[in-house]
Length: 213
Ligand code: ADP
Ligand code: MG
Image 1 (cartoon, helix red, strand yellow):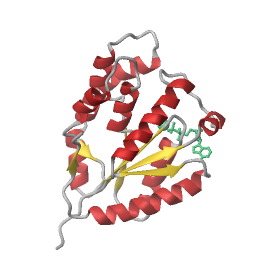
Image 2 (cartoon, rainbow, N blue to C red; image 1 turned 180 degrees about the vertical axis):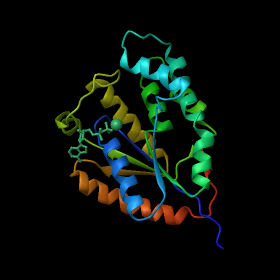
Image 3 (tube, rainbow, N blue to C red; image 1 turned 45 degrees about the vertical axis):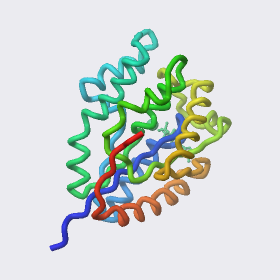
Image 4 (tube, protein in one colour; image 1 turned 90 degrees about the vertical axis):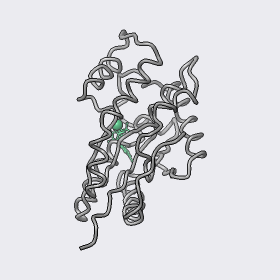
């Protein structure tokens, strides 16, 4: 009997309303239709104990928390899910993750008096994604999309800085791919699905990587 191949760790990043949540859901559906075991995860995971604090911070602008403290909470929220992620991956389940360490880094590092290198450190040791999709969308296109939220960070100036920093991370890492998110939902989906399926075949028996910034 051949050993179970591990699942792939696939992450979608991008600015607000670039279509991350839409695409993550569709990817899991399409993979399941192809009988490829997969599961959707999203960060922050608002159900855990740190997730509840994070939820309060995001929803309530009056909730004051030191920038470094909230950064570490977002990171802890990923660490809380480590065992679950590893178990699923080694059981052969592909994880499609709506935001991950890179969102954590970028959203903190663009704040005044925060330092990019410092922001990366708490992520070291978490599972390294096999593939990160960066959904790219111009500011004009972003503003045409429905559902500009009312949570902290959902403003144009902040999102522009976030987009620039994502670009920088994308250039620095070989496991990232830019995908133009301006096409229709189905067009973007088709591009992502093909790349995902190839990656799932490719990772097979290889060990899961570890983030090491
Ligand atoms: P994100 O999770 O990146 O913030 P969402 O997936 O929630 O983005 O999408 C934001 C909004 O844009 C939703 O109303 C969604 O239906 C819409 N949307 C997503 N992708 C597209 C697309 N390719 N074209 C047009 N509208 C889209
Ligand atoms: Mg979303």
